Each structure stands twice: as C-alpha cells, then as structure tokens.
Image (tube, rainbow, N blue to C red; front, top):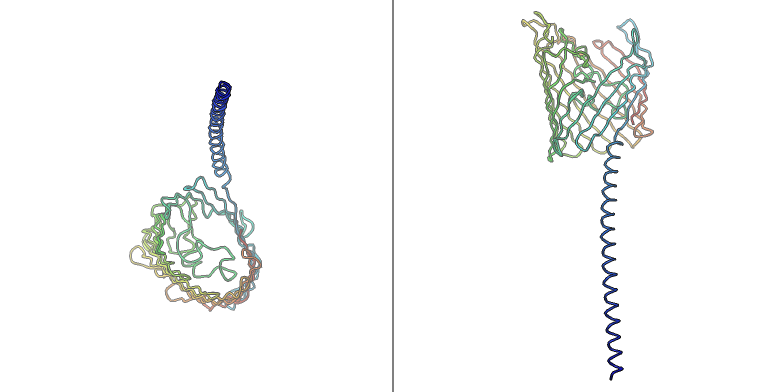
Length: 377
C-alpha cells in the first residue's frame, strides 16, 4: 500500500510538472503567434504603401497617331491640280493619372511635317486639360479640350473612320478639328443618355468665316465666351443619336463695326446605326449668324449634311460610300462631293486607305484619287 501511494504521488507530481510545462509552452507559442500577427500586419501595410506609391509614380501614359496622304486630283475650273504627298499629321498623347479621381490628358500635334516661318506646317496644342471625377458617372474638365460636336471632332484617329481625308462638311461647317479653353461638365446615366455642358473661348472672325474663326487658344481674345450643350443616346445596341447646340454672342470679340458678324448659333445632329458589318450614318450641321446693323455678307446661313454607308467584311477589309453637301460661302452656292473607297486594316490600329472623290463645279471641281496610311497607339 505504501509503495502504491508512493507511485501514485510520483505520477501525480510528474503529471502536474508536465501540465505546467505544457502550459508554459502554450504561452510561449501564443506569444510567438501574436508577434507574427504584428509582423504580418506591418508587412501588409508596407506592401500597400509600396503599391500605392508605385501606382502614383507609374501612371503616365504615352500614345499618338499619324497619317500620310497622297492626293492626285484634277480640276477643270482652277489654275492648278492637286498632286502632292504630305505627312498630314503627327500627333503625340501624354497623360497622367494623379489618383483614381484626378487625371491629365494632352494632345500635341505637328501638321504637314515641318513648321516655321514660310513653312507649310503648324505646331499645335489641341488638348491639355485636368479631369476631375465628381462621381462614378460624372466629371469636370478644365483646360483645352475638343468641343463635343459631330462625329469626328472628338474621335479622329485614322483607323476610326473611312476615307483618306476628313469629310468637308465637318471640316468647313463645324469646323473640325475644333478645340477651345474653358470648363466642361459631363455625365452619363444608366439608361444610355449622356450629356455635356461647357463654357469656353469662342470663334473670332468679323466676316463669319467659320473655319478661319478658330483661335486655337493662342492669346485668344475672350470678350465673348461661347456655350455648348450636347445630349447623346446610346441605350440601344448599335445605335447612337446625338445633338449639339452652341451659342456665341459676338463673333467679332468686341472689335466689330457695322456689317460685321455679331452673334451666332450652331445646331448639329447625327445618327449612327451599326449591325454586323453594316454601318449607316447621317449628320446635319447649320450656323445661323447675325450681322451688326442687319446687313449680311452672304454667310448668315451656313450648313451641311452627310450620308454615309459602309460595310466591313471582316476585321481587315471595309468599303464605304459618302455623299457630302454644304454651303459656307453664300446661301446660293451648293457644294457637293461624293466619295467611294476601301479601308484595309492589317492590324486594328493600322490602316491603309484608298478612295475616289468627285466634286461639283461650285466646290472647285476637284476629282481624283486619294491614298493614305494611318496608325494609332
């Protein structure tokens, strides 16, 4: 019995000692786990900071586009044909995202290959603005931006449209490419409706010559600001409907005299429908300009229209036909140009183009072929 008690006591003592040691081990293990949790938290925090820092310092982007044109056009009513080759545009994009809500965008362009005194080209800053997100579906731009009007004024990279040259209606009536300085609020809704509201610098030409009136934000007089509003609907797959109105109270920018252009209103509307490879589009644009004293230089009404049909057989080949009608010299001169041609995309961002154009006599009667190559990246 004594031996049994002795053995039992020894076992109990050993068990207590083992339990105490195990408890101590558990405490040590818990301390190590807690320390690892702290270290892991610090590592994760460092990784997040590193990722955030990398995001802030690696969001500068570079892109661009360009196009080379060959024109072989003849005319029965002018003193010279148009037979030339021209690197029409070389454009670079620079952008930077400061954070998820603020970004910078710019477009820098060299036209006609070389610029300078007595040279054919120009160096232009077409866009340079800061964009601020005000919500998940709206933003504000401040700086130099493209006016929200027409089909090609905002999207004019060569792979995006048919034909070597930009169409004469948007070139002369809208007039693309057209940029101004100011501020613009843009928003879109879940129903497919989007809109833009802008206040910005305006055109300036006492005679009401629209294309010549672009100031290009170069020490531009700003006695008369302009106001632009656009609404667009894309709620049905393949369909785009859009309309723009712009008003400017004084084309002369405070320098006009009797007979000079005063206030003007631009109305533009277009529709685009795409189904499969078929794309149909129509556009109408019209300026109504008032002249001081009720006189007119024949440019009080300037308008134009476009009807275009194209078919893309596959990712590489597409054909088109386009009819352009416009007047911006006087209300009685109706100019017309018909274009037919083909686009070939060896890559989605590279395009080769060929088209034939025919003008009526009122549009200088330039007929012939145009060839081009363009790219974007």
